Image (cartoon, rainbow, N blue to C red):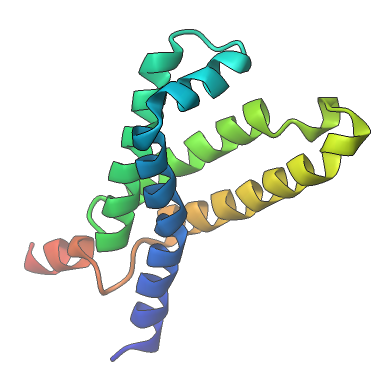
Length: 136
């Protein structure tokens, strides 16, 4: 087995787990998710809650299996960056809240970087995308 292909599939899975778990969590508590979205002043919080949950679950699963992985990674990267700016804006919070929100913001930046790496490099040899390209 190719070590690069193995490391890329593991990386995709590790990146995707947070989205799949978070997406199912949002689906399990849509009212709470919508309330959190509304607290940021965003319009249509119920619609955005369902959209965010669906994007996380579908994008995460696509990333895991490596099907349309570049598009899924780019969508999740954009989502993560926007969510970071809207919900982890540590610079605008009282001092006692800044540490945790800055930590969440930096974690999200790292995840965004990993997703952009998948977008740029592709999902690797152990993916449906690679199988589809090889068959073409």
